[in-house]
Image (cartoon, protein in one colour):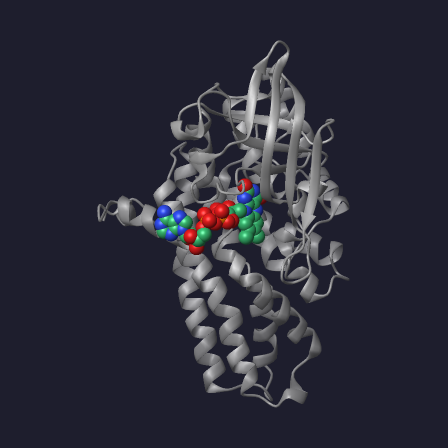
Length: 385
Ligand SMILES: Cc1cc2nc3c(=O)[nH]c(=O)nc-3n(C[C@H](O)[C@H](O)[C@H](O)COP(=O)(O)OP(=O)(O)OC[C@H]3O[C@@H](n4cnc5c(N)ncnc54)[C@H](O)[C@@H]3O)c2cc1C
């Protein structure tokens, strides 16, 4: 039971909670005209101008040190921002990855020059990053990546392919997990992380359309891309350790609980009206909220561990697995509730949001590591494997 015991309940400090009202008021104005089915995309949605505005407010890179343009605040401050962005359905996808994991990764492993070059631009909402981990044939089995950066006189020559790279077509940089020595059979050895400027000659980015008609992820091809020596982030050969630590940031946040929250709120507003009120709707609302509250508490507890510099990989896997299960339950349960009602009473805008979230929901338990892989990690963490 070590994993569960290690998640001590914790509260977001008042000085960080104080951010909430300001963010909420700002977003109410900034995204006033966005309809709910667009808001439902939230951290999958994309708005360069909103990212710039949030950067100007100091709400990107809020945990990064002030000397690099950040806010010098705790992970709890970032947590409050993230919750408010998600709850309002703000299209924050442009800077989401840079803020959540590329910035902290560069801070932890980067050279002084890398920190000074990338971090201030991340904080201003001017440098967007994507994650280059998955490849065809190397998703769950990430250690078998084949994309290779061969050391050359001036740095590295990069060849290979990444896939499912969220927002690569809108990003300036990718942090890619690549092989710098050995073969795919060497598994965790010989892997490194490199920062790839996606505007370099030899990089081709092709968007992939998903079930909902959105093109948010891409294939990315590297054909003899010349990288400088300063593309290497962290130590050569330490890529596996670095990526594993990064996954705790990727898996534990509120975006693993709140992907269906815009839909849930919209439905809740309907079932609160006298015409729609019903015992079954009350039971459903209670069921969702009584699961959401403890899951949120667990997610906040993981933030506390990240704040202390720990790497709670198993705990983060637990939050993601339970959180995405709830995220997927919400659209299915709301569809059942609406099915029992008179079709003519159902607002079209609610149906549009339900359609989008239903189509997107299978991906909730795939992105960031699949359910099966997370359950395997949790079982190992509990000493069951
Ligand atoms: C919306 C979305 C966004 C994404 N964004 C990114 C991104 O930005 N960057 C990035 O690098 N990747 C991204 N991904 C890719 C994602 O991380 C992979 O899809 C995921 O890790 C699974 O890999 P795969 O698709 O190769 O499936 P596979 O690994 O081939 O898995 C296929 C099935 O087999 C199961 N399986 C595989 N191995 C095992 C095992 N050992 N035990 C039990 N079951 C197993 C899996 O659970 C799954 O059900 C994204 C995916 C989605 C859906």
